Image: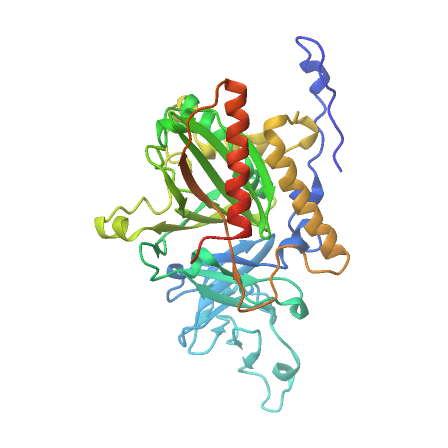
Length: 431
């Protein structure tokens, strides 16, 4: 656990803050054998875009491990240790074969599961290939992404079936598997994912501070509430817009997925559950870099009109603007990447009421780590291969006149938000 910096009680007190606390290793370090790393490895995680796998292997780094991902000529995907188990040559220079990948140095051929198929040059009666495997991880493709399971082989779960990724063809709703849908944040995984349960920043960073990056209604300070769900947790950010009450719910789905309700909402008409426009995973490459993988969802009307958002760099999500412009109009990239030198030091924080979502998020991750350490499946892991996992991110707008006083109206907003959230969790909208 971290140590705390002094609570400053005087002006010009920076002298007391020269000793910087260490990061919370249990929640920040993702390498093999670390508490967080072993927890994250119990789940399927995206590791590449399907479109990246062409005629050559792709070198990558996932949770501190150097790996190579490829598609063989039989259209199977493989994810394996980067360095050949023979003499250590990098398989990024391997030759993609009809079945597996062949090391360029001495021609050893590895199947996608690590089976050694050929050891050319060795004696004909050699049994080495029958006794040895190259390190490999299970990999599957879904919705234009390559997913991998990097945990204990005997704990392999089925690929999860999230409702938002299984409704292709539903009237009024379809998905576009985003070409190029990934972007890098040069900071620790934790501060990237905590952002998903920090609804107050949408009013400040995305509206009041930097101008309306979504709709101007986001600048109305919301009433905040949070609730745990069967998949993780949601926040409810509820705003009064004239005679309408807008409840915005966002999912955090254990361990690394969140979903975002449409950011075009202006609360100008009443409607119920408006499905999310974005599904996004945050996958740690190592302790200091995080790759976001995203799928963009479209209604039939958006799709037919060709309203396709930029696949990766929506405003403020990447280091794609001049530095002085980012200082004047900062975005998510700047806020998250700059937290405590790219590695959050919790001992320097002073959490407040609006940080309840972040506090709950951290507790859920700690609970999952503890479950793994006890030898149990972590919360959120689904063993039933046929179970559709329900999710809850949405915009709901109801026409409800204001209460008599400001305080009574705030209480009314909180009550409506809780009713909306509990109703959707207990009886999710039909697929």
